[in-house]
Image 1 (cartoon, rainbow, N blue to C red):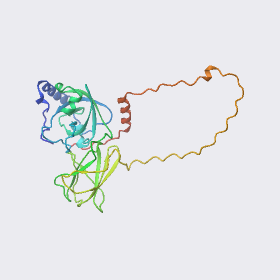
Image 2: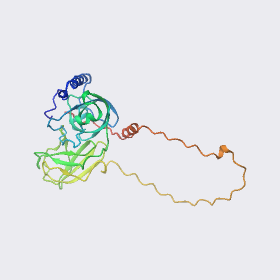
Image 3: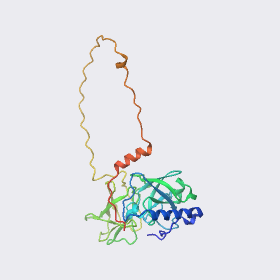
Image 4: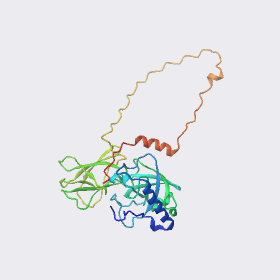
Amino acid sequence: MTAHRLLAPRWLATGGAVLLAGVLGVALLLQHSDPACAAPPSSAKHTGKATFYDLAGTQGNCSTKTPADDLYVALGKGEYSGAAACGSYIDVTGPKGKVRVKVFDSCPECPVGHLDLSRTAFKKIGKEIDGIIPITYKTVPNAPAPGPLSITFVEGTSQYYWAISIDNHSNAIRSVSAKGPGGSFKTAAQEDYNVWIIDGQMGNGPFQVKMTDIYGKTITAKNIKLLPQKKQTTSVSFANGTSTNVEAAPKPAKKKATPSPKPKKPSPSPSVTSSSAAPAPVLEATEAAPDQAGDVALAAAEPAVKAASCG
């Protein structure tokens, strides 16, 4: 837990109007019990409330750098889900519009449905003076990442203690495993500060790091060197990766073209009535609203996610 993650609303410092919002936030906390552990937000649409906060020079619990666009969100314990939601993207719609934010931090005092946004993100969808606003939100599968997927060995890593931070993966990661030369894959455990750890001798590398997202897609980054605190960019991504769980559908066999019979000369026939000669009516296609269509597609792709340990 980072130092700024206290059980006091972090939006109190913004003024009297926001002080009232802080009181309302506490009321929401008392009215909604936070489950011991839940899954990260799904791609189905949810309703809730949003507030905002400032990092004040600290780092988010997901152990990654602040997004360059300053658009991020802290989730309550139930949706942060022991860091399982870290690095995923959420579309949040408020009174003024929509914003896409990266899951970057945790908010222990926030119940499910209460999103704590960066000030920059909040101002895009609501009035800062309001302090707390109604929202709808949903996770965005395969959201474009701002850069290539990167892997960083954290401070203290050695051949006996293997620990990495992963960024720009876009989809939430379900599992990570790794192996060195001549070894076999060993499973890493995710800590609630979003570092994947294999507590045991792994050697000096280089390593292959296998990652599977919550949609079942698996990618493997190769030639990852044991270089603590140095970000290593990879050439893999979940958007373009291959899955070991999905097989390509076989291409349908091409049918041989059969020669069509030559048309016979038309024979004189009585004139056709207008009702049989009229062309079929053109039916106007009806489209769902963009948000609704997106909801249907995303809901169909939503996997059954087993909740991670929230700790």
